[in-house]
Image 1: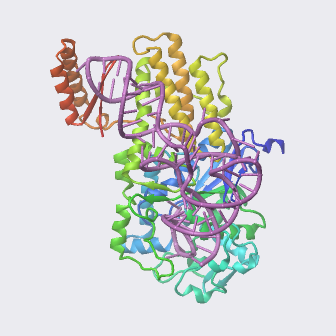
Image 2: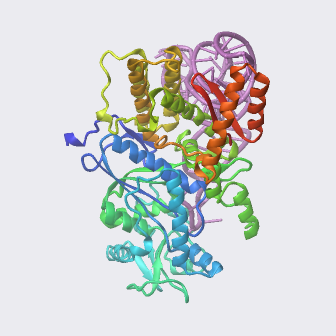
Length: 525
RNA sequence: GGCUCCGUAGCCAAGUGGCUAAGGCAGCGGAUUGCAAAUCCGCCACGCGUGGGUUCAACUCCCACCGGAGCCUCCA
């Protein structure tokens, strides 16, 4: 059992026990992790990206600490909402699911989420789902009723242990289902198909899986009956995860998951209510459903949907950094301004990388860094800069060890950037740099990049829109010419001309900076 | 109504039973610069929603209140 002991003092907050616990894996050095993915009935909004970015970071960190992680994110591609939406659009449910899955994947890619190992689809797992339901019936935890199959909540004395709720709290689906259930808290494992609905044959007649069962079935087939981490949004704790947990625990007579991790939800900047959520409802009043078209507009105005334009405007890295600046369990307010602020903060790093790159004569992004925690070797008798960075690295890692405190850890990143800038300033490296100071700078940057890589940022150079477009070469050539003319003017101390050029360019959106090694420019957003 | 969580500077935000309460944005002063920008140095909460309590010691634990959020509806 010795090898099961953590090599590093990782602690994880567990929703099940409502406390931080030392991280212990079921198998030595291996982690099975499952995140509830999207129901692909509409384009993803920012809220759908929180979990993937968080757990992408969790996987990066665990891998860095020497674990071999298998991360599963499911795609729910059969569901009432899919059926309704597909009908509205006049396409099949499968076409809709394919389109929306592609949208989801492209958003993940833009945000640098590339650590997912398996993305099982519910419709590819029907056999496993049916088998799971049958086992629950055989073991007496579920019953068939007129083509539906329900989980019998009364049979599970521990029901409610995750959300601290009783089965009575569960309203279940409305409509006709209630009459077929033994008690209101029972939930559907299998739903009989109405005419024209997508369906699969089963021992209980044609139908489709209930919402919760797919996660139990797919996680079992990939990760086993018990696995290490199950994640999702805080809004899934009840009923989804409660029900999943109940099904799996009853079926296997053992815990489903060691650590339940839940991320906080996004809120819109202007009004109450999470992004993409339902509109507000006064307690005690009957739910007032806003008209569908208005609800859609409200959602959009709150930042829901339109992720593609958001990414184009702010870049995926900026959105990712924004999400990781706060603690994953807290609620954060989302909007253009917080995003712009995150962008302003990131500029510090981009500028540091640019000035360092000029000094070193290479791209900072090409500097190698440790990819495993154990790989890092602190230099003996380090120069002051590196001693400081090693200390900041320790600080960063101790925050990550404590329930993946990415928000706290970013402080050390800024401190690192300041130390690096100070070093460049003090050694006047932009005027002349010797090999020794270059090597020190290089090592320092390597540490900064090592930590940044754990957050999944600064992995590749940001491509500016200018270098992206067809006219990039033209712009490049023009700028060289303009800057050359301006340099001549400045050499002649003709500041009126040089300032006129700078002001003029600023008006067309180009910002320039005079430095020791010449003038740089960028297209300011 | 039940179950959770939160309230830290102008704004965002980390954190803690006892060290100067991180960091970012904005702002201010200085170094630097032809002037800017950037960078560096310094300043910016005698204070952690309010009122009690526990304790040698509380922003941190407990209680009440005020304010906010989520869930109890197939939401991530």
